[in-house]
Amino acid sequence: MSLTARFSCLSDYDPDALSVEQARAFIRSQLTPVRTQERVALRSALGRVLASDVIAPFNVPVHDNSAMDGYALRHADLAGSGETRLRVIGTALAGKVFAGSVGTAECVRIMTGALPPAGCDTVVIQEVVKLDGDQVIVPAGQRAGQNIRLAGEDLAAGKPALAAGRLIRPAELGLMASLGCAEVSVYRRLRVAFFSTGDELCSIGTPLADGEIYDSNRYTIFGMLTRLGCEVLDLGVVGDDPATLEAAFRDAAAAADVVITSGGVSVGEADFVKPLMAQLGEVLFWKIAMKPGRPMAFGRLGSRGGGGDGGDGGDEHAAWLFGLPGNPVAVMAAFYQFVRDALQALMGADPLPGVPLLPAVSSVAMKKAPGRTEFQRGVLGHADGKWSVRPAGAQGSGVLRSMSEANCFIVLEHERGSVAVGDAVHVQLFDGLV
Ligand code: AMP
Ligand code: MG
Image (cartoon, rainbow, N blue to C red; front, side):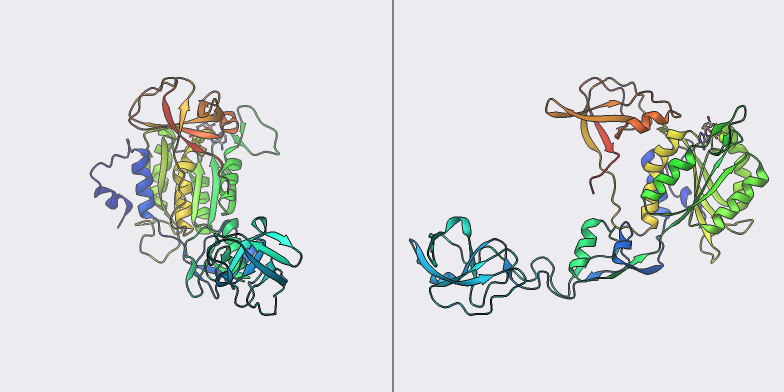
């Protein structure tokens, strides 16, 4: 089915007034993840998506072991009330098993991670015992089994330790290492081709001619894609000329899973790009009710000409297209609100690690009309016991400086009106901890 046909099922679809949520949901509903897998060395799996479940081949921990430094003993030896004297007959260290056996009224000094000797079922922490020569005096109130980590309590043998679809972060690397995995199966990396459009654009390394500006979008896009772990293909600057543009779109679609462009989707320029797109696949031109980032194109490009239904169902290679606006901040806002999610879905990440909306107090008034979602660049800070946020300087959609000085988006929702000092707003943090 064509993209337009799929849309016609939606009652409230209006390409000239799509809400951020509608656009995001529609894009999401179209995507199917890449399925090609490859085996990579554990460290190379960082940032990739797990392609098959990791089953624990053995228990983690492998053996019962002590959670604390203290004394391993037989709980049955302890007096019901009052103190108990036990003789210390040796030491159990992590990695050095105490081979002897522990008899009645005996105990063993034990370190964290060491295996409790045969018969010992309880560890008493060293801080609560009194030493008396080769004996320890253990106070009452010790619980049977305390301070012992049981075999398999972290990961049970034969059970999935990690499910396919998991984005691999440092914790997952460590977890797989604890299972002895030297290699893991991950989905192949997404190949994303991108280029900038505009006769005014000059690439760095060349002096600017009259009326030219340096192309910055290719650098923000490169950065955003690289952070997401994509394989990037920079196709440079393409002028506003139908023949060159067509060739660039064809090359990009043939080489990549996803094509990202910037510029050329604003009202005037779209009129010239639209017929070209109709030749190459199926691309929808949207005006999204958001600021910045209003115009955007989304669709499917076939690598062959006259792309019929845009590759849907055919065995020809086809690539997803995101035609982002030209303004540098609009590019970044649209990328983070739509493309990031889409790329993670295509990478096979499940569930999608969405960006949370966190509450903060606005320290300034902000003008806003209901009927569109605004993404202001904000500076979130902690003062007087609360998190408060203010816009980061001039908010023009061309002012990259505001993006650079910000640490969050202030998300002013669709229906919301102006914000007064002290009002609660939502923010999306630029940086996560992990
Ligand atoms: P457009 O969407 O092509 O009409 O571009 C909107 C604005 O963004 C214009 O001022 C362009 O000069 C600017 N712009 C477009 N592409 C880039 C780019 N790659 N780098 C920096 N500015 C750009
Ligand atoms: Mg342009």
